[in-house]
Length: 386
Image 1: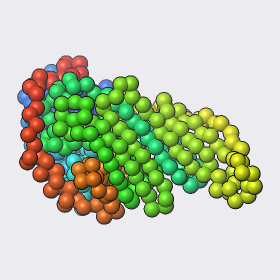
Image 2: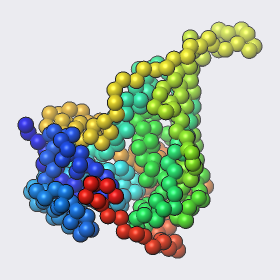
Image 3: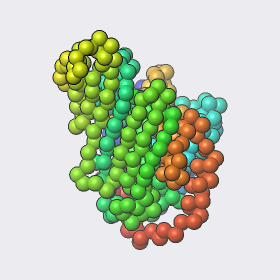
Image 4: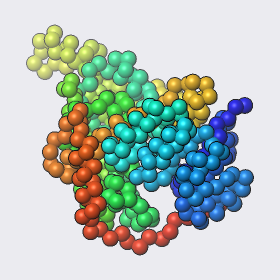
């Protein structure tokens, strides 16, 4: 069987997990050939776990080694685009972990490099393999919901205690992570939002920076979105609520859809509300409706699903579930929310000011007075856990 020769750059939580997935044979068309990390202790553990896999202490050395035709970038956020660009320029196939980057300016550069590379470019948007959201997207695209009026997603089940923020030197600062809840916990959902509903035209947001934790980045966010077709959306997220909620509600011409606890419930109008309004003569009339629990078929293969799809895309020409180019879309929503929260202004998403955002982010880094608490070094164990 033809296999991709796979290299992992960053042997932390995600990188070590991808290594285990491949070594356990869950991605038959990938062979793990190299691991890179700048931390000698993590490299030492990787050698004990996988003694036959080559190791490197810097990304450039792995990329230029000739051992791999494919890499995954599983480093802290600021390095994602930079390492992906280097791999793509070398002609390697590249998967980047989420987010695609910290600021759109750099990600747009990455996309341009990818266009001129012979490598296949993907992103680890593993929630696109979730049958719940795949089914919902199918319902939207085939017109079952009719026109969408309003979307509200409350996703506050990201609870993270202070110990989480203190567990790693790079977490929860503008300089090392580039954001908080929006850039860390929410990229998958912001991607799913644009994947299902498209990109908004305007964004207004409010955020609490260090509202619940001793951090300088956001841990509580409310985003209001407007679309050119009149649809509106509200996205609410937090890492400071326990217990939290994960509820997606869609108001549409054909009724109401609620997604919660991995189930889709459709309160379906017998006829479109817009059609009903034209013919109804009763002052308090409303469309007849039916309650439907939508059938969802299949399991969610998550990371291994993206890896297997990527291998098939390279080797057999299968369509990518998560093209790397699309990483800029969810990031644009995230950056727009940050920018709006910083300035108090409504952000024009269609004409997003990439340079302005970058300058304000750099200014926040330069003027930061935040002092990170002493961090206990996080080391990967021999069972691949932390």
